[in-house]
Image (cartoon, rainbow, N blue to C red):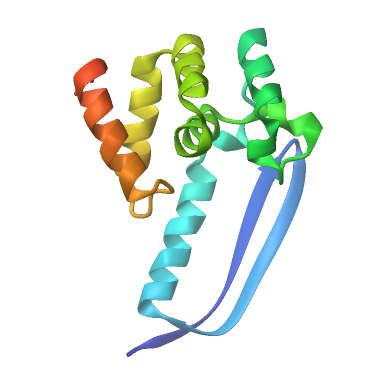
Length: 146
């Protein structure tokens, strides 16, 4: 197997602060290099790097469920992306939480986010969650294929 000697620098632009993380590895296999390249591209192209403004109702919803994002500082939680909110609520929320999310964000937007997540290489949903919401959204949500 071919090995590369690389140093990867990932720049996170968060709240106008620049954080630089440097991964220095002596050996990267082809697959490791490919995975790190995908990670770098997804971070650079991520819309989550921009601050997200939510409605007051969504901000209250985030505060009620702030324990789901225990690693995020309290003052940053109101700027969570819809992707992060949908993923956490569908994975760990109760039925009433999911219904409330559908009321606030809309079932079409939540289903679009869900299908975008599961289309990736490594979705952060359990197999049961993927199966359940795949069937649920096929039955209850309109999907645009444009």
